[in-house]
Amino acid sequence: MSFDAHRCPNGHVTYPGHTRCPECGEEQTETVDLADRTGTVVTWTTSTATPPGVREPNHLAIVEFEVQGESVRALGQLTTADGVEIGDDVEPVYEEELRDPEAGIREPDSQAWDGYRFEPV
Amino acid sequence: MDRVAIIGASMTTFGDRDAWVRELLAEAGDAALRDAGVDGDDLDHLYVSNMASGEFEGQTGVPNALAHDLGALGAYTQRVDQTSASGGAGIYAAWQSVASGASDMTLLVGGEKMTHKTTGEATDVIASLTHPVEYKHGVTLPSFAGLTARKYLDEYDAPRESLGQVAVKNHRNGVDNPHAQFRKEVDLETVLESPIVADPLRLYDFCPITDGSAALLFCPESVAEQYADDYVVVSGIGGATDTHVVHERDDPTTMNGVVESSDIAYEMADRGPEDVDFAELHDMFTILEFLQSEDLGFFEKGEGWKAVEEGVTDRDGDLPINTSGGLKSKGHPLGASGVAQAYELYVQLLGDAGDRQVEGDVGLACNVGGFGNCVTTTILEQP
Ligand SMILES: [Zn+2]
Image (cartoon, rainbow over all chains, first blue to last red; front, side, top):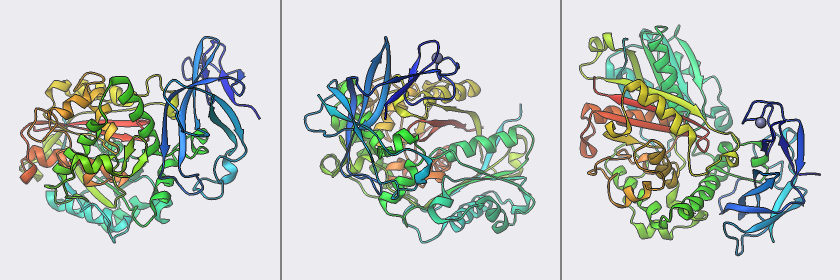
């Protein structure tokens, strides 16, 4: 498993990938694995009114990574919200099942359910 | 160019209704036709704004059902789904149908039936608009609001209390709206002590789950007086999108769809933000009223919270916002909300708003889908 951001020939990086680069319209031809990098918390929340199959409370953060001079952001669950503040460093931690695929409205086979949580460093 | 007029409008009572989506749509549609004395078989086009009747109650094909129920057989029908902004997108479609000459009489009805679901289920239906990489983390629209509110308060040194003031103001306005789901004042303390939903936001920072419907009747301005003594015109309208994936925006506190759709609407109307006398904004979450009031150009970036604290946006302020009570107290039946915003502008412009009447001849409505993913801005004026 990797935590892939996608890059176009002009160096723009996005997570997730898109059919064409949202910045310049070129095809995204490379991936950059964010799994071993340290990111910074842009903002975070603790959600207490969660949908079926989602942990409660659900701590979430938007995290920013630097990839060769370009910044790229990702949203993900936090392992804990204890003491977390904007600007803190976090590291991705793999999680096999982020929510119960069978419980929500979305067709379980239509998407992946594993991914990365963010652990405060 | 012949402008597009609105000659009739209606909304049902919003709240916890026994009626299902077909009945709600028919109730509002029938009332708007009666308002203008127009028959169902006079309709050339019939649009229905609705996000998720299939997901909520297993009823699809609602425009055809409505055409049959209103005696509008033969009319061209279309469902408009733009999530929470389905109503605004419906106004756009209805305006386009008349402006293009394709229709001389268009009825738009927006509606949603939601309260039979649990809060978790309804939240999940709405969250299904998110990208798979967001959805798998259990993100909800309220959690986007929490993420954005924290960033806003941090970035602009705004006090938490200012968000609470939005709820206090809109609840106060809702008291005088007979169609509103909540007609009850709340004080700041109650808002600030209500249970946390998406930290730092609490229960009273969020709109409720609601059933309801609203309708608008459109025709060319040149024939409007044949149907109605009083009418309003659509002087400007614009729609725009922002990123599907919310975290991909450069500035989490700016809604580009609001900026771009309002630029288009202002230009069409030959108006600027300073010309707007009152506005209905999409306060699905209190933080959204700040973001829109700034991105529409009413206030500088980062200063929207001050305007609320200073009473500028109160009913007796310089720029009343959400005289209807907003989504916050009026309720938010997804597909109906954008239509009901225009209904409020319509009754205000006609002087029919009763105890919540404000002065002015230019009103603006901003309807937001997703978390700013798709936006329609509409300007209505006296002719
Ligand atoms: Zn590019």
